[in-house]
Structures are given as C-alpha cells and as structure tokens.
Image (cartoon, rainbow, N blue to C red; front, side, top):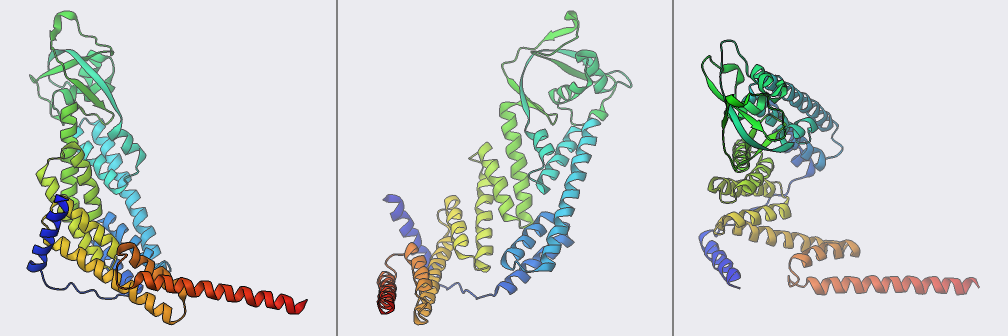
Length: 381
C-alpha cells in the first residue's frame, strides 16, 4: 500500500513538472521499414555488423515482402559468420603462442558476433575445479619458454596455461632470464619436481581452471566476469545497441548486484530502448521498457509521463477503431479492438457495454440464420 502511495505521489509531481503532450505520428509499414533500412546501412558502413543485422531483421519483420532487405540480411549474416570465424581463429593462434589476455578478448569478440558459437562457448565456459597443494620456485633461463617449463614439471606442454595464470602472465612470449615464477602442484595431476626443490604453499582457496586458459579463484572469477560484461555493455550502449547492452548488464549484475555504474547504465539502456520503440509506435513494448526503467530509477518522471501517454493513446486508438468497425458492421473485429482496451482498462468509457452489445447482435444474427435454415428445410420437405 505504501509503495502505491509513493508511486502516486511521484506521478502527480511529474504531471506538474512535465505537462507537455508527447505526440504520436502514424507511420506506414513501408516508411518504418525504410527507416530500419537506413539505420542498417549506417551500421554496415561503420562495420557494426550486429547492429546492421538487427535493423535489417526489423525491416523484414515490418515488410516481409522486401526482397532487397532479404538480400542485405543474408549478406550481413554471412559477413558476421566470417568475422566471428576470424576472431575465433586469431584467438586460437594467440592462445597457442601463450598470449592469453589477447586470446581471451578475441574469443569474446567472436561471441559478440555469434552468441551461439559452440567452440567459443566451450572455451569460455568449460571449467574444472582444482586445488593447489604446493609450488616450485623456478628461475627462467635464457631462451627458456613457458611450455618447456610445463614439460619439465608436468610432462605435458598443454598445462602451460596453468603456470601462466598462477603467475598472472598474460603474454608468455615476454619472459626474461632471471625471472622467478611459481609452478603449482595440482592435486590429482602428475608433478615431476624433486622433493627438495618444492617449497610448501598452504592455501585454502579452490581455483577454477577454464578451458580457455584462465586459472583463478572463485571470487576473482565472478569479479572478472562482471567487469567483462560491464565493459562490454557500456561499449554496446555507446553504439546504441540497447537490447544487447541490457543482456550484458544483466549478466554483470549477477556477478555484482550493487554495481552502481551497471545499475545506472541498465536504467539508461532500458529508457533509450523505450524511446526508440515509442518513436517506432511499438507502444506496448515501449511501455514495458519504461516500466523496467522505473525499477532502476523510481523517480523517473519522464518514464511515468511516457507510460501515461502510451496507455491513453493505446486505449483511444483501439477504442475508435472498434467504433469504426462497428459502424461497418464488422462486429468480430470491433469486439477484438474493444477487448484490447478492456484488457488494459476495464472501466474505459463504455467499452464493456459496447462489447456486450456487439456480442448480443452477433448472437441474434446467428439465431436468425438458424431460424432461416430451419424454415428452408421445412419448405423442402
């Protein structure tokens, strides 16, 4: 009850603050499709393939018969697939060279283009829990590589990323003679160090070894993931890819629900998406986005004003369309329009009475048809 009172107070305050009307202009599907096409072309010219894909998809949804739009959409899909493959293969090459930080960024770039890329998803999500028991202090000699160190202590060069992450080495090609590194012994894995060379390292931390080569504590894992999604979301927001940004911010909030910067950008993304939908006259989706904006910023006067205008315009439009259909004796269509109004506001004008009246007329027509059919049968007999 208190929450409703609080919302009512904000609504009244906003009504006094923002008294201007928010005009709606009626656009044809062809015009809306053309706007999406222009935006898609702009994204293409900037090399923003994901944004272009979204705009062309929307254009084709509005106008399914657009053959040129369909060609552009298929071209962009092919381009995205090829670009994602290039990022993936570049990431693999960097990973093999021991340049793990850049490899990780390439994998994320591939995933941004193709969120369903199976090989990349496997690399970034496959994890094994590992407990470090102790470690060896090893001094890098001239010409020695990290893979040779892994071979020496594990008997397998594939374990090179374990040493790299344990020592915060993001580029294994930048080792220098005399550099001290720690080679960890992992419970359950072969460790070939002699006992006298082993220095005990007590730890209560459980680590996570990712298929992509990272090796980190559980707490650090969540922090790093949250930071990656936050930065990715801010980048998408700057490119006006609001829906994709919202997805990234939601993932960041799972890692840290109190991240103020993420919360602020989540509000901004929902609001910007709502305005975009409003201008395209997708009113109900726009209203939902404004409502989500309010979850992050309760005193958003513009959100409340937009919601009120949207609902009023929506009800008025469908109410009048129902009247128009009723005048043309298209009763089923009239009922459908009025039921849309009724679902939002059962007390709007005379909508309940009008639905009841139209349904009564339909029933009378149906009864009259049955009577005429029965009379026709009797005359035949």
